[in-house]
Length: 134
Image 1 (cartoon, rainbow, N blue to C red):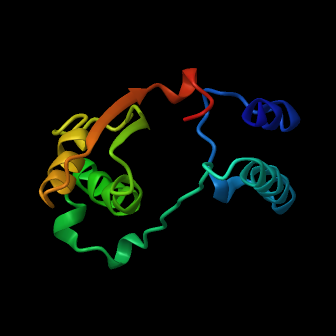
Image 2: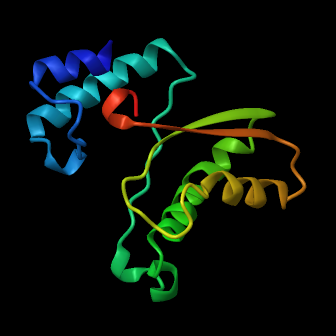
């Protein structure tokens, strides 16, 4: 409901990706306040984020956008994943056509299972234009 309310309040269209950097201070403040209310109601709700200064990333890691995406997403999610016995990850289908396709599931399983952790990991790719939660 929160996402639908935000779309309605700011007259947003679902087929255009929303970037936090493009929101005005007023919009960002409203959204942050609404998310905070949700967090207070449900202690299982979390917001995790990562910001990357690409100019400081090794050139070799930036050669392939999908490998870079997997690496950064792995950094972001690893500490969350290892806290569970089973986890489902829902990801936006990538619009960037890269040589490796949807390789994140293999990447994250290798990263986690390679530590000897027996965690059931499933990854689901969803069209963000058809699902406001992505």
